[in-house]
Length: 460
Image (cartoon, rainbow, N blue to C red):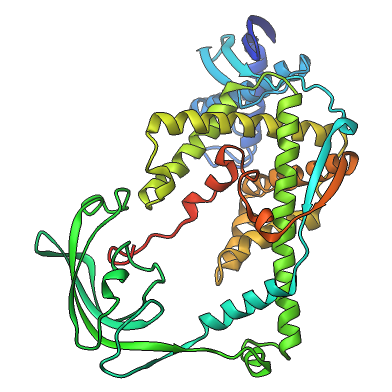
């Protein structure tokens, strides 16, 4: 094999590769001979088919397989011989590939950069810590009880107020014509719940059983149905009943109804849940500090191909989020969003390379139990279809490998934090929940936008 490096520019490398004809011919003959015992050709016994007959019958297809395999193996060898690691699969351009002649191809690769060593002792982090207070548990219990409240009809003359539940029929119309998804019968709506589009529920306050109300509203500009987005509409609403909620008492009976032995057991479960949420937020903020420090203090070139792929993935999710009505994206133009998320893509790629390098240099490994837990976590997101998720990963080991990245990132983060100077600072729940120092350029928040469910036209 003859290799000529034709271009070196930053992280980009280009090579011209030539593989001798006899090397290709040897591989071709070997593969054809291996087929002799497996294929059937009239007039010949299996295992005794002449090579020229095999070449005539199967040569074209086998030659293509040999060329593809040779290019893959040769390109990997080019990188390995030069101690280079490709950031992405190399781009291949075949110059010449004819049977009996030299195989020649051009190879373009973007390599992973040399990453400077990290001085872990110079990393100083502040971890916000929040203790779960009794009032936190009390408030959570009351919210839980509030969701379990029952509604009963009051007097026929009772007027609906915020918090009342109204049983209504409604028909939505645009320019006087009913639109799809805008009609319902005996719909139970709690006023003030925000279940319907802005302005709808407010206009039913003061209504009573038998009231007929014409509700005038406009759909949000970024509504997922283009024919309704930003459009003024009316809803003809008939109020059947006005119901008021009966407060659910938080006591032992309530705890048992929720599946717990007693009230104390329920309180502990809520305490532990809140504590887990607090610890999760605390870790997110600690990671954000760490990532900021690493990004600012460590400098190295980033493969543009990896950035482009990351941005493409982000952009596709953003487009889905916009279609599903994410209002946080409506105020910015595509140009502004592209500028913002290009920086996020660069940050993610840079940190990903850095953490991978730290994991590699410090021999951080992923065991089978950790991988199995990751699969189980994925399966838990699809209730009732867990078996299909397990089978998917069993049949697609390539996708199983995709789970290794997040696991390895967390192990690298734990490794760095374990060697860093970490001080704890006690904060209130309000301070912990503040998002000012949580998401770099809204990075973590926007990862979740595409997961928002679509809402019906009448109750956006």
